[in-house]
Length: 86
Image 1 (tube, rainbow, N blue to C red):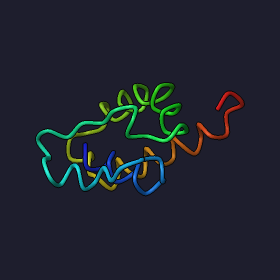
Image 2 (tube, helix red, strand yellow):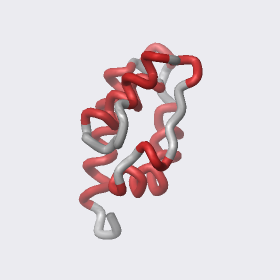
Image 3 (tube, one colour):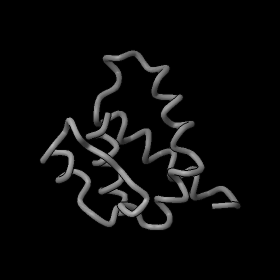
Image 4 (tube, rainbow, N blue to C red):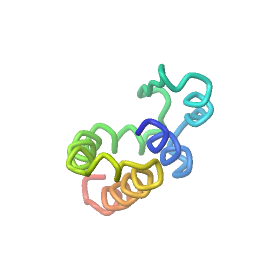
């Protein structure tokens, strides 16, 4: 799951550091902080990340691939950008 999140945030250019590099260096100690994200990423994470996590919790374990998580997070971010308050 962490790899999918790191890849998505890096690919969407929302991170201020390379999250994939951080994940690859120490996958068991991967972390994400507000300072790692640009303002749009921070706003999205505060407003929607818990909802997104809840949605992915309902997926079957075999469905939680990095690619699917990345695609889902990207789609949710695009929808978030279209909301008036974003």
